[in-house]
Image (cartoon, rainbow, N blue to C red; front, side):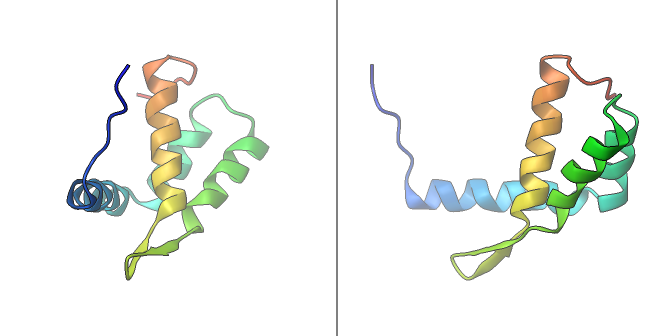
Length: 85
């Protein structure tokens, strides 16, 4: 089994693309999706709190919490555990 690796440039490009996705989604849209997903209101609120988490990476401020939340939603949609459209 090989160990796939990417270059620094590829990683930077991937991070830029993830940030673009995060910037294209509003916090309120994410909250509505969470509320309509069938999750308890408490869990939806706790997950939505991720939206405000940021991290400076390579001199850029990255919306890491929002990226993680978007990936959680994408994963849940893919395996059909949430009722998101």
